[in-house]
Image 1 (cartoon, helix red, strand yellow):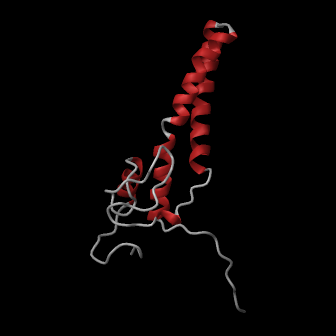
Image 2 (cartoon, rainbow, N blue to C red):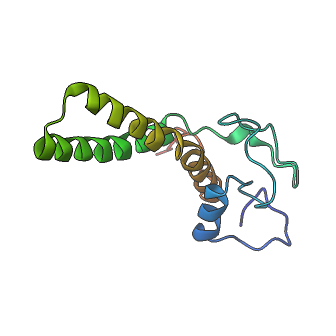
Image 3 (tube, rainbow, N blue to C red):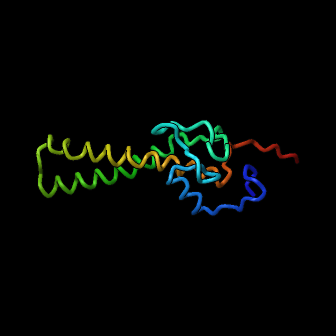
Length: 133
C-alpha cells in the first residue's frame, strides 16, 4: 500500500502511473500540475497537496533523451551523407534543429515519467544496513 495515499484510494498500476507521468500530472492523484515552469517543479500538488520535496530525478531524463536523440540524428546524418554528400553547412542547417527538437520537446515528459515511476515504486536513497551477526 502506498504510505502517502489515503486509506480509501486504490493502488495504481504501473501503466496508470506512467500515463500520469507522461501527462505531467501529480503522481498521486493524477489531477494537479507537476510543473510551475518548463522544467521547474511546483512545490506541491495544487489538488491533493502532495509535497514534491521527495523528487530527485538527477540527470536520468537528460541521459535517456540524449541517447535516443543522438541515435536518431546520427543515423539520419549518416544516411544523408552517404546518399547525397551535401556540404557541411547543409548538415548544420538540417541536424541542429532536429537535435534541438528531439532533445527539448520530450525532456519534460521524460522527467515527469521518471518522477511518476519513482513515486509508484517508492524509490528512496540507498541506506546501509547494519547486519548483526
